[in-house]
Amino acid sequence: MTCTNDINEAMYDRLTSIAFLKEISADRQGFDRAEIVATLGDRIITLGRDPNCDIAININLYGAVSRRHAEIRPIANKNFQGWEICDLDSANGTFINDRRLYGCYALQHGDRIQLTKDGPQFIFELESSPDTTVGTDYSRRPRSQITSITLTKLLPIFSTGNDLWKKAYLLPGMATVGFVVMMFAFLGQPQLFNLTISVYISLAAYYFVYQLCGKNKPWWIILGAAIFTAIILRSPILNLFLWFFYKVLPGTAPTGQVSFVSVLISMFFGAGMMEELLKALPVFSLWFMGLRLGKKWRSRIGISEPLDGILIGAASAVGFTLTETLGLYVPSIVQSVANQALSPEIAELTGLQLLIPRVLGSVAGHMAYSGYFGYFIGLSVMKPSLRWQILTIGYLSSALLHALWNTSALVSFWLLAIVGGVSYAFLVAAILKAHSFSSRV
Image (cartoon, rainbow, N blue to C red; front, side, top):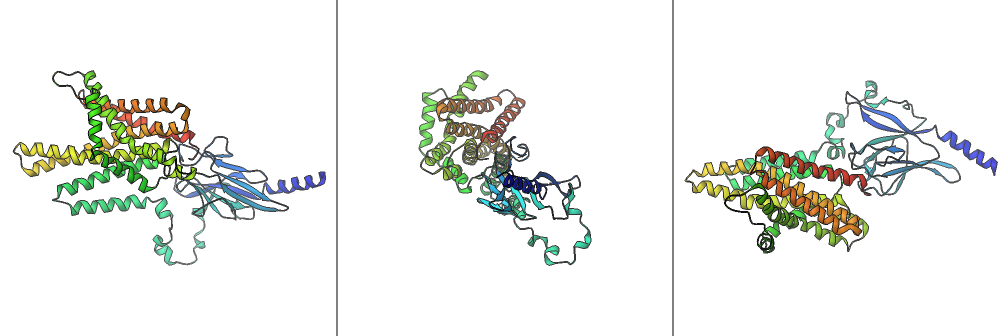
């Protein structure tokens, strides 16, 4: 028995020097470099965001990587057979040579490993490879290796594969081109032009939040949340909200000589509490819907953690902003200017000038408040024993931020800018905190 153990130990001592995991990174000149981060042997190597992992990923650089994302394990039954990598049910996936991994995969020399689509990249190499030194520069190989000029070298677009979508932000670029074409097409048609530019600004703002969250959510769920909120604003449900928060509660703005405090109180009960509850309805709806689904689909479609609440809350805010701004605010301003006996052209120009800052400010503001409240809704799902305390804190704090924004304009635009910056900071802090304890990211 001792002899067998000695043989196994000798075998594994030999294994510790025959395979390496190298991390691929760019140097100052933009060339790819591969540096050894682990020597593979008889023990399991864990990769993830958790500081206790063997290869700990920086959360500030790669927030979409899971806490325990993947493992590299030796394959040894009676005889040693190599190493395999296993995905640990990560939220955003492990990719081997640009293909998503489900379960485990036996590694071969030269395999490229990537944690999430835009995450850190590694390469698996055996000792027999000529390129095993630390700092091997793959982009500086001799030019003599290019033995022929092929069609893919002359037309690189045919050889970039999935990287064209994953790393080059092709979809946002194509969408921008499409919206620019629509703007040209709708010149002279102010309603369609305003709708186009408003949707583009809203999508750009939401895409930023989506990327910051780093969790995949089906596009039809996100779009459905925005449409759901827009429908509520056009339904009799809105009248019920208006009656309760403006008649039963003191949400009506004071008239005559007013003070900052009196306006803040009315804005807190009116715009703050009413609108934040209304925008949270899609989040609560998906939460209840998810209760009937399995764990996998609950995470994908429903609300299972704070990141889900942030994404759906922000999407709801986009629907609210577009409906409120295009359906109520801008038309009333244009009509008011037109009633002052000014030309239609001046009225339309005034509407456009107000539209852009209104949409930018409202999207950033509404997304901040709704996303922040969504964080607390997702947190209450994870901590059901403190659900009502968590929801109360989230609801009141998001309503207060909303009320402060609406009231700050009475004092100065500088105070308005400060409140807006603080609101955005609250949202970003919630996203970062959600990353730190999320079990799925």
